[in-house]
Length: 543
Image (tube, rainbow, N blue to C red):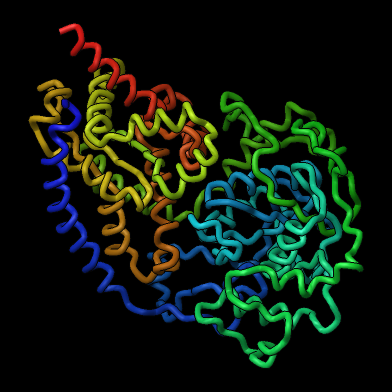
């Protein structure tokens, strides 16, 4: 009952809080000027064919405030590691934004080991419905390309299409690979998204036809400049299906595309060169994810300024290079600057510390995937047990008290990061923190009740300060908010993280990289919540 009594009051407060904070958000959105158009060319997109939104009509002053990250590729940059300019590694990425970043880390590392110039890939929007066709996100909205260019040789996807003559020469796979029906569909999607082909099409279907199909599928309203093609028998019946792919592929004359390795690849970084021994010019890195793993304890900044001798690469060099990869694949510069300003305004205004709490467990997206088919039963049951707003609020307050006792850390605020689908659940937690009687059941009288901050304040702040910026256009905003929340969690004094979440995992890596000592105060949130619930139950039984 302890965890149930305060919930009704919390919900009533949350409703009021939601109305007030949402009004602020709506006002900010109303003030945004409509400056978004579909560009006449696709220069903003990293794909030659996929249209993406771009902001136009901005003054230089506005763009300076936005810290627009569009890259000047005409400028010459001498990277720390100059790689072979006649061999290329082209990443293809999968999953949500954080899975994509983990795959990208693998590709950057492999480019260095194999001495291949890295091609800046296509990144994608987040999707919870397993869509086959995902909208492209400009790479400069996900990573600081200027920083990456300082590490290794890179080129644009458009330049790679030109130098590779629109062809993929070989596939580097991080798991066993066999060209079947599924792989043919994915190769066609790569073709549509990059302009690089690894499949042979039937007569009468070429670049112009694929361009028209791409415009139809990825455009907002089925836009294509070649409507005459709609009457062809192979034209897609809808913007979502993929059966049309098998109608335009020449099934009997597919190119013999070499795949490396021919068996399941080794996960040892020292075997990378033997796994991918190829002189082919243009290699497609096939959906990398977690092939090369490094213990967090190995990640370090202490030797980041040293140069690894790539000619005599050893296994011990792997974690050194991976540390450099992490340091140089960070979010756009604007994310760090905006995050620090927000922290100062909302989280550390009184000069104290703040705790960050990440709750990833929304039912339809994360839990629907992680817990499907009865896998990870013990973990999934622990999440369901801990998914109680009153228990979570109690656990956060208990952790604040513990940080004061053990580390003499004064926590003045809490940032709660959670998916948008959990907005109501988050508001319940906010409401409970506003109830002084509830808070004082756990928090000693000599500690102030901390302010609790969520994405509601963060969105309002971003739209007030940086509306009309490339990173805050409507379809980019949620992605930017997620990156800002990650930076906020990285900088927190203590981080209560979510198991099985790559979002939390990436935050933990950067926390360790930036300040190893901080990670001693971190804890997995479900474990802590359940431990507090069990302790409370034991006290009840003893009394």
